[in-house]
Image (tube, rainbow over all chains, first blue to last red; front, top):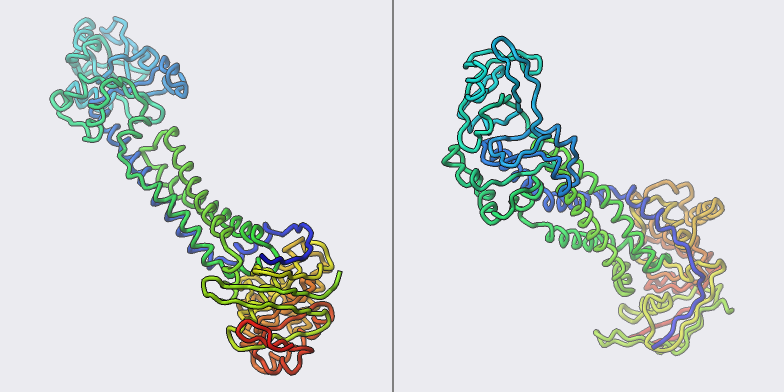
Length: 360
Length: 210
């Protein structure tokens, strides 16, 4: 083997300057890759987001139909420390399937006796699911009163009550089966569904017979999964969304796609990279410029894709934080694959390929 | 250290194509413009790539002079394809050789502008290269090579795509570059042959005339 001999001290190539200047000056060349990378990110992450949102929608529908229990338990913070007592207290819960509800979530509301009503009474916020289970469609100024208590207190449908300082009209109801505990209670229809960081209580007696008891059916994917998971009696919303989401797992394709896009970037930029080699940047310097350019484009694409997804995710149902963390992680993985693709291809340019690129 | 480029018994082979070049025993002294002539495929460009270190010789030793400034590349190039960073400015393209080893100073910028003026591109530093004609790009490449401060300047068909006046301008610039560097030009251009200080004739990879 021959020898090529020249002395050259260690240089400090201005890699950062060149990469920044190239990205700034080369917008026409950068934009297609930026668009391609955003496309890869969205095509890989969006199906997961949509699947999660779909699963949460199904879950909310099932809870609001009265087929599932939706609970906030201060006691559950030992199992799920992320749920704070404040969240639990602020929570709205569905009593239709409540089998294990605990005190804090169902703290009695203030009911002022009026007229002939003199007995103390507990009032609870209740869901559309429970009212459906009771077979009642309450109006905006109506509350439901269990038949036993109504009898003791001398209340009839149409009687007046003061609940939280507001005068409301009574609808007397006869709670069936598992809801007999509400025979001596006032039930105040609630609204809204703060679906983040919640616990789903699974009571087979409720969800297995939802179609008979409530004339509703569980979405197939939820029902399928619950049947496989009869041992689970409590789950987070995020766990249900994660398992029942049935997302198409496109992210490995996205990783490969981002890597190949990086290789293509080097193919398109080979002439400039060869020039950098020619003027003395060397293999690592030229590869460093391409890699830094790729990093800048990758960050740009990730921020844009995150903005687009954030707009989608601000409309309900909002996925819980503990599953949304996967979205930026997957995005970061794809940006990393893109950068690695560029670094790999740029480093792999042999001296002969430099010659070929310079000869056009 | 000698300021010449010295090739001692240098050989090279493209194994896949089954082609071999050399052996070459050549000294390229500073201060001369040496033209390397020969038909296409005779090995002119290969000889230049070998000197530049872009191809590794199969045998023999190539010795280059050390750059005057530590960290500088020993070789500067002017190619037929007039390779430039098209989206960048003319001045950026000249300074890129300096950026290969350090941040350019104000003096570097002033020198770059002098070299641009020497090749007829004075005052054009802010223009984008995409706006330059082929001849202007070629002269820009020459200014970049001269500004690099490399002790060896290699030019591969530098006038191949230029008209007569541009060719003369490029050769004059090469001539002035030879005051400070070894200048080797691979060319078919008879005008350069007649103006060069020395001519090397290659045929089928072998040196047939010095």
